[in-house]
Picture 1 (cartoon, each protein chain N blue to C red):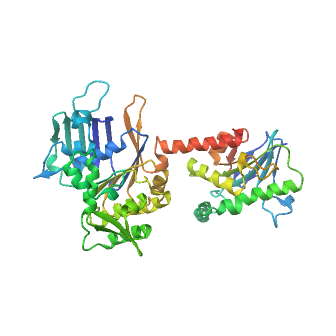
Picture 2: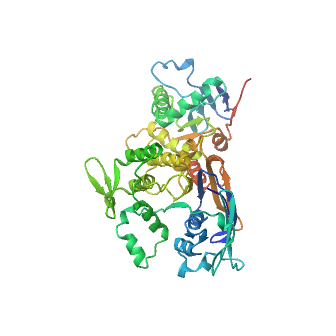
Picture 3: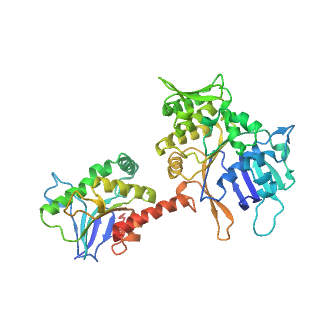
Length: 332
Length: 176
């Protein structure tokens, strides 16, 4: 479990510190306030490969996840006023603090690396990839394709075979998803199918929203999402009708109960509100990333959605409401 | 003359209005078959139908308040608040006045106050859409009816009522 992060001079961030909850961490913010960067940074640190407790490669994962121009680490260091030569990142994980310095030569562990045990991070990107899975892995491995590695990683994880025995809590999640999807998922060679009563439907013909649920189904059935895993999900709401969001929230809360730590970046009022309404007895925290007057990114957190400030999503609804009222009262 | 009108715990100061009355009282005489809004308020160039919903009033006994709020929220969710209460109240009140030949030649508006603090602006904006639909308010594009009908509907909570209608503020009076 990640309890804390501190970032200095990395991509859009000047200086940012925040605690996390063990359960569900929800990030909102205008475009360009670093939500995805925060998720990707946490993921690439935790997804780095280890040998005997040491990083197998110092900077590869970070570069392959962020894909800076010419794969230059220097481009991940905050640019702008005053030339910066390095960025600093520190996290606290399971009570131990680990810190890194990033400069153009590489990513250097400053302290605590021995505490960083292999982890099971899962990153679900905005774009759904299962329908494009056939051949993608070999293409990615053999050719220079300009795709962040998160896309390859999620396909790799989706292809892991199902567990032989599932616990009742895992079965329950699969059942909930099957009800919404109208069937189970099958893999034939490199292709995914939705197996319904009457037919097997190839994923290219399945609605993108349903494919997102299918990905969850695969990751739960093969045990990738289980106790001790961390899930990073960028905009779960994309391509989902708001009516399916309640199922997504239900699944995420079940995963939280199972011991999965979740990080979500979102623009969806419905998703946030659904979490707030179902939050009883769950570990949930809402975070707002925002640009201050000096242009630097800050973060605020709140235990409930309506206490979160600043809240760009609520502001937009207020603007629409004000226009409605303006029209009604003054006939404008 | 306008006056202060009270609905349960909510006190509306309509003293700046030309006229303000309770509409759903004993004088209505058609309550066996027609629903009625709470107040009618007349201004120089506007005539308002006003309905007050206060499911969190402290006059509701403590043990029932949670239940009252839940039942109210359920009515919002399944839209019966709009289809069976707020919509018909306006339509019946409008018809009543129309049949009386009493509708003033002024801009007619329907204002509803939902006195629930937790109703955020997103839910209020969504509720306005539903109210619009169930009051048959078709807006400026209405070509079906040559006769005039209400020109605007709006839903407020206590805060947004006072922010936008400061000339007739609402306040909560709690009698202990």
